[in-house]
Amino acid sequence: MAKQVPFTAALRDRLGPARRAVRLGSSPRSRVWRVELNGVPAVVKQAVESTDADERYAREVAALRLASRVTPPVVPRLLGTDPDERVLVLEHVEHRPPSPDWVVGYAAALARLHAATVSEPADGLPLPAWRGPDAADIDSFLALADRLAVPVPDGTDAELKALLRRLGTAPGGALLHGDPCPGNDLHTPDGIRFIDFEQSSLGNGLTELAYLRMGFPTCWCVTDTPAPLLREAEAAYGAAWEAAAGGAPPGDLVDACAGWLIRGDALVQRAHRGTADHLARLPEEDWEWGTVTARQRLAYRLGVVARLTAGRDDLHGLGRLAGALRERMLGRWPALTAPPRERPEDD
Image 1: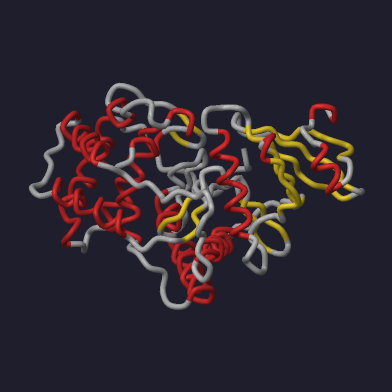
Image 2: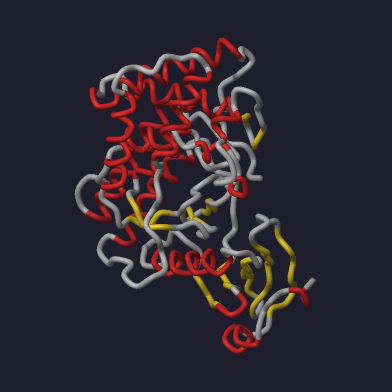
């Protein structure tokens, strides 16, 4: 196994030889090993050859370098890179089982990560702007309502178009992880470290704070965070952002949640995103991914947005539609259950 580690001459010259290599589990988009460098454990990661491998590698290296500005640290130290082979070497961080209130520390660490680019912008680094939902998502969402024979309140289409404009102009510049899911957070005695920044971008931090309310929309492990912990976690995010950047975090959390609701690609794993209209599939088929099925994911998100928009004049129609869609889904598929309350063991 050690012979398969892509530990190049350039890395050996800088870090010494890599010994005692052990292959670790990873996504199909990368290969990961634990090694020893001068008796100290480290991690070697290589982006697997694909049409976007160079972009993913560049994003990850850029994000790690930007996040290294944060003290105490929120990422493992980047020890070395070899761009020709798309290899990076990281400090090995021991992960321990998260505490029952893990979302509080997670939210605070996420805010500090996001704020890494506030005082020093990421000028010149290969990180794209965050891409939100688009007009096709609106069309698919409203078409689903039609397929399920749920009337769309007057003005909802205009509300959704205005939502897209607000999301597109929300204050950006925060360092977004891109997939801040359980499993991409390492819990240590000294705090949380985030890993796997292949989808990182620059945008509004509330886009990712919304993960807690929306059940981690790009993740295998959808969970329903209890309301008291949710409030504590969101307060921790706000306090950490203010300490790092000054003032309250910019943006609109309700808008961020509504944006995740209408995205059909948030019902499938990354490999299947952009390949089909996944909302259009739901009336005829359901599929499992992680802790819940696709219909469970959507029903849960509909309930969240229906509650959040209850007092919003600018999202009143969407709120009514979300509530009605959820009721129709539960009536049509009565076996749908709520996501689990507790975080599962990391996949």
